[in-house]
Image (cartoon, rainbow, N blue to C red):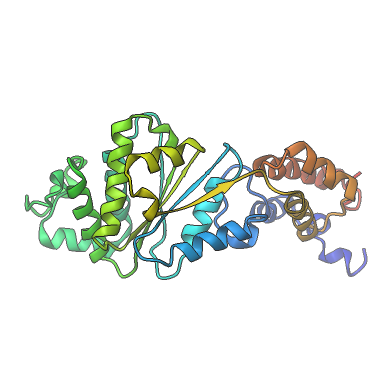
Length: 294
């Protein structure tokens, strides 16, 4: 084996190490969170980062299912300067405005020692968020009640932000699964009040194309509070880059025709590019044929 071959993971690493390395390069089962691996979305990421430098602005990412909205949202959230680690919330058919706000509270209370210490010292509970004094251990005796109004929810988020060093960033994924019109209107009004009252919190919402109309129609001035970013399937060059950069890092030789085939079959949906590449690269590893795609 030549000196160069010794540098190729596909030829030198055991299965576990090879698989762990590949898991850092390809992510078919979970959203990306690093700018380094978010291929083909550089322009959209830059737009969001610039837009969210403005106080009181939120982001809405929309597009077909599977085009990478969650990856763009989470990467954007973790890339924002002077912000806490993102709160990640996934919606389902049973989600409501109240359950989303409750989840923000629950995640922060379990994550931030400073926030939890402040609650304990003040003897506060969530209790329909007046943050009423109900005993030192009330927060830990059971799940909190849901906020009963937009104003209560705003007070809650303000309370959280005032007990943290950096601004709160919340990613709300699959927002389109909340189909109740009343809940949609309440959520839009809440985001407007977060902005109007200068609360240090930013929300990044993901949904299909109808989510834009849903949020914008909920309040006449909603467009002032949102930066919207629409996603299409990945362009060809980005598809090629995902496959070729992963292959290079793994020390795998892959011909251009195979790269084009993967890009075509995927139809520009990132999940399929990552999944097909993963399966192919494991076949190359198993073949023990010099790390060449055949």
